[in-house]
Image (tube, rainbow, N blue to C red; front, side):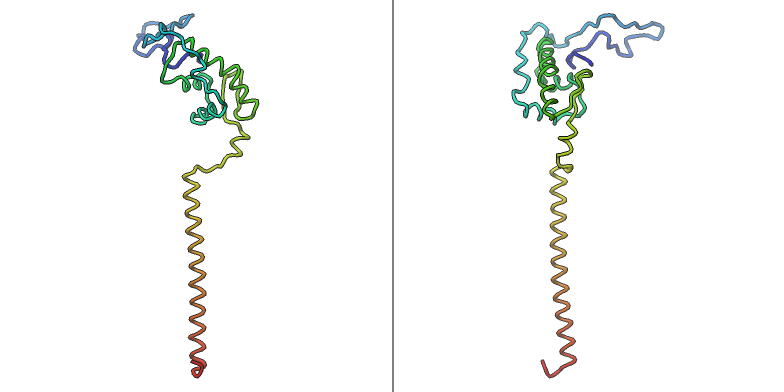
Amino acid sequence: MRLTPSWLRSSSDTSRGECRDDETSTEPEVAIYHDPKGKFSSEARDAGEFVPDSDEELLAVLEGMQMPATVDEVTDRLVEPAQPPIDTWAAVHERLHRTRLPALDASGDIEFDDAQGIVDRSRSRAAGRNPFSPAVFGTLSIVVLFVAIALVWASLLTAMTVMLVTTTFVAWLVPGLV
């Protein structure tokens, strides 16, 4: 688990161009984070400003994400594009990890692995959803409608053809009736 905002770069994240082949790279024992926008000095904002008030709003955010996702990714999605100070990001992360996500897991709306910090869609909720997107469902509905109309027209044409053939046959056999 990352436990840091996505916009911060760790000093342990070295690019390939930073170390030469003859140098041995050692990982620092303590990662130092660089804030490229200088937002550490800004005032901390309330975590409640970023965490949705209702479960439905939080579920809507989760539905828009690729699953499974980490708590870090959910936190990043909630605070972007504001990029608040790390203290605010950590407060949002803690609120999600300790209260909001476990509550949604208990209600069966999501599956949350507290030990790994992984959020996934609930299997029971996913099973109850329509397997088709609205566009696919609409297209299939139109196709079924056209097939039904074609079958009705085929039935009418068949009935009219049978009636015409029968009338013609009778007129040939019995010329005095016509």
